[in-house]
Length: 263
Image (cartoon, rainbow, N blue to C red; front, side, top):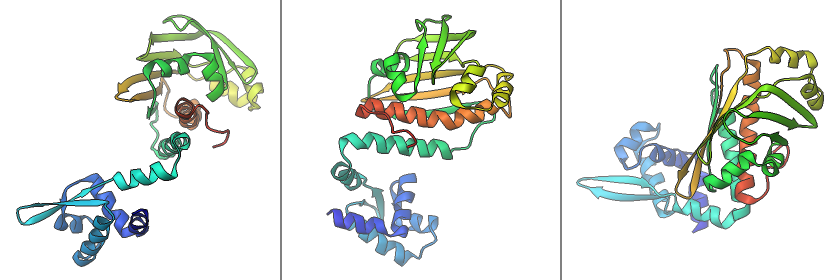
């Protein structure tokens, strides 16, 4: 059966038909032809191959046949060829690719992913230095209460500033804090141009918010980093960093290991 699925998926026209059904399930032959630049006879032949592979099912309604996407054979292939350990990494990398290709707002960064974990474990991963040091390389001195100060430790640099504060802390649901100060020590620790870091330090301080929502066996994590002015260099920098960071957090919780450096 795997051979039939692989053969069916090998043709770009058949993949286009599956994409069309994924966007709008239950289409008739006429509807599928209208949405794709293919002759009716070609669409019929491709649908027959997809149906034989179990990727499409049909249902007769009156005089018309409706076509439905069936993803089960693809999931079965994933179960066979991608181990439970690696599946989290594959999904994390797919999330990372999607985030990096998404258009960027001029004043905020937003990223949403789903993690197979519990709100309690995810909260621990966001606040416990034993976790943050593994996927982030950063640790924090704070009691994680709203209004409390935060001292950042990252790449051997200690970043202390009274304006680094926990803004919101609702365990297992919502966490927000101000972003760290761009100090000369931070620049030196990361090998950054001191003048460029000094320029970013002049920008208004931003904030990051984590929202956790239970969705069955998954937790929906939304990261919002905002408080930027249009044209912010800091926004541009964090927009490139957050997707990889959260992808590494996700795979750590799902597999026990963060993404390898440079993944």
